[in-house]
Image (cartoon, rainbow, N blue to C red):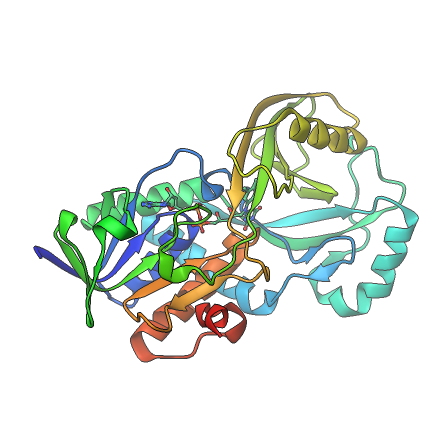
Length: 350
Ligand SMILES: Cc1cc2nc3c(=O)[nH]c(=O)nc-3n(C[C@H](O)[C@H](O)[C@H](O)COP(=O)(O)OP(=O)(O)OC[C@H]3O[C@@H](n4cnc5c(N)ncnc54)[C@H](O)[C@@H]3O)c2cc1C
């Protein structure tokens, strides 16, 4: 083989990119391969990191573990690549009815450290202000910008190739290495970071996905956007003065990346309940989130074939979780440090 690496990564979405950075930080030799699909989950994601979510005001799973690491990781990369793609930003959660407000009051003692104020000052162009709301501090990753600048960096180190990989045809597994003869590559391990897609290597058969299609809109408002990210059944995330993204739907049957009229109707009907100003829809996009049956990510080497691994299942919280999970993987590869059981690939093989 003409080129030897420590790790080959298949897929340069949020998972593959973040793993590549953590491996490079540990001074490993990495080659990233991606087939450059135009519409992927990472490329359309809003990249929101929200500490308190849902009707029950649940604290995001392992927030205290994931959030500080995500902030440090993205900030460090911003300075290394001289590119802006991450913001810590205030988020405004509005209550849709009095029962929801009461549910928040009951939950408040458990989540108070994540609430920045319960008197958040609600702008007049939001129509649903009568039940109040609260503000929390979250984050936003501009995922496509993060992927693009990472790709440029990997290319500059000769660590990136545009390639579509077939496990059956391209990859040979040996006791101590993998080889990709077509590309003249060999490595100690290959890690699959392919997101949602139907052709997984057969040895990963026990791993069960429950993928969820999601759609988002880009809208132009008649009024300057509120700078905070709004949550009220849907989210409204400002891009710049008049433009914002609105999302997101969840759909488990149609797993295409084709935008639908039904999703547009659902999102605009929710937006109409929130906004008092006019807007027009200027774009609509759809992709499939890689979500697992147990809603937990998948990280680690195959229990039987230690030369192949998987980093996937980031679901709707990829931006938040990817940096710490990728470090779990890296430390496991380097030192055999155990991976958190709830996210370990090996849980699917018991
Ligand atoms: C509408 C929507 C909104 C979302 N909003 C948020 C949000 O606000 N916050 C958040 O954290 N997450 C959000 N997500 C989820 C988040 O986007 C995912 O968790 C994350 O993008 C998954 O990344 P991934 O790298 O696993 O997969 P992908 O993004 O699918 O990347 C996989 C990559 O692998 C490549 N690939 C696949 N097969 C091959 C092959 N055989 N050979 C070579 N390359 C291959 C693909 O081209 C792709 O680049 C959202 C998702 C959707 C759909």
